[in-house]
Image (tube, rainbow, N blue to C red; front, top):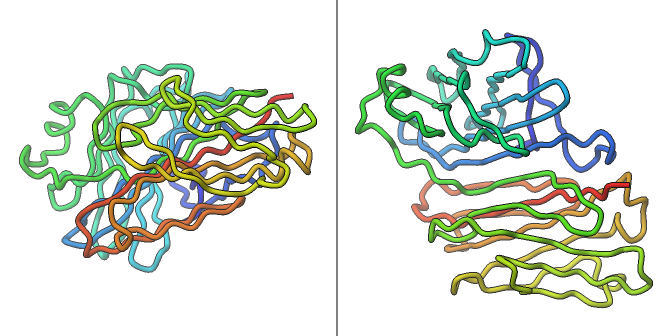
Length: 293
């Protein structure tokens, strides 16, 4: 599955890879949320990508089909163009029609690209609600004519985000299944002779990596609310490249079952594959960290 898919034009379909190969100046403010869903009894991944730029907000909904290709539906929200803030679009995958509905006309946004409230984005197949995001649930079911009891229980399995900073990089994420949103902060001062990598969750220092020039790639395990969370890092670009032109990559991963999801981690891409027979899933938070000049 390609990172951060997007398509251009109102009816165009295209896959663009906006991953860690971008320069720091051109890296977009992106958050991609990946959900494990079921369409006609088959397991699939639906990726919802939120983006923010000087031109405005945008949302991309992508559905992986059985051939590992991706059918995309993109909704662009622009301050001067209100017609696309509410509507629907259909795409084909899994040999069936998939309907995407959205209402972002009253959406509230914070400093990041994700909508915080006053919206819905939904995916419907055969009048079954495959995926529903946002707090306008009643309006979504009314608009889509989906049965209120048809929700198929989408599972949030991964989040990919670009973060920016000089020494500290922060985000919020639900690392465990307890429903609590945790504050995650990564600190690293690469200007000193012997830099150290520090990871804090909810203000507590849970990981320190010293002699970072020798351990620029690695993994360790921290404990968050009695849940083991594996942390993987790759800061090679920060230490041996040009920090303004390259990014570090971090992954926070909880795996409840080693068979249900296989994750490969590298500087360039995080690939996710799933086993449709599994009923339990872990969660992965992937951060592309860019240093501001």
